[in-house]
Length: 216
Image (tube, rainbow, N blue to C red; front, side, top):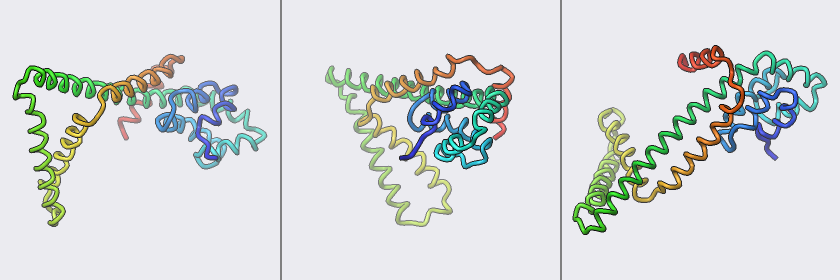
């Protein structure tokens, strides 16, 4: 059975609370795996193995000096690892906030269109007509692109990219779920608060990590 970083957090946390928290106590799913990988990579470097949960878990189980190595890593890099995780958490919070704003905007647009339809206003057909015309135009341009060599036509490539983004928004408006998107955003935002509720790393550590991220 494939392991994830959370599966080895239990053996690490008693020796290194900060690293154990980053490994498995922040968020679940792919996002949690990505954040847990920060601590996992640091452990892999200490044990000289591949940065995978299986390799690190095996090394911890087989190395007689594992406890001492984990405790030393906590002392040397615990604050740095937490700061790195916090930077990713902040990025997650920003992304979920944007998702929430988009879901709210979409819901307001739907409610406005519904109110027009309830009053019998012909303007209620506006969104549907515009979406239909847009979709037809998008498909026509896409068909032209597929039947011609457009690699050198940068303007057309940019146009297709922009139209594709708009088409995605149209599909989201008519077939997406504002409530589902907002609930997902709220759920991730709540989970993202977990690390903030832990003792924060020093301001110097956070500033150093943010500076390094900006340089990348």
